Image (cartoon, rainbow, N blue to C red; front, side, top):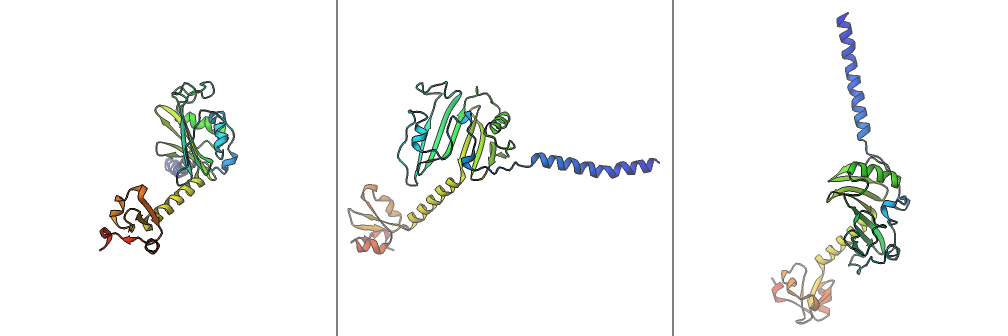
Length: 241
């Protein structure tokens, strides 16, 4: 009788363990998010900012936001600090330390908001749980680096604690791919371009270290050596092997 009872208990142990493993796996399973960037719900915690906004639309939220010129890749970056800048209306940007904006070709592609430690959801777990509800996105954000990230269709949400305050970054991942591609092409072009010195009419191939000594204001860029020579430039002596 005792042996039979022991056998029955032992036979249930694998089933119990399997059930526990299944539950643990189910809890750890990352949430899927099929939302697109233009489907993100307007949330008060984002202060009316969202991906895809133009420079003018962002500036309309506050006249204190200033922009510089786009770089060679079409990127414009700017930052505001409502907590430190007394001209910002603290009732509009309550508990906000910093907001950073990245634009590509005039459209907002990255929004980062850093809150003070006095923000209503100071801990990372409660921040993720509540911002998920506010944005109407799944709440199970997998851990990534020093925070948690939810990846959706074409964009991602990343939350972390910085300087004891929660922060959120909304990123257009497709735009990041475009920027990376442009930088890669620029790097490839730089490796093949020929630099001409318009003072001496000498040219320097990409693999000639002496090219770095040519002042920027005196440089003429050629695509090939033949193009440089057709323009009357000669190979610099430092580059002759």
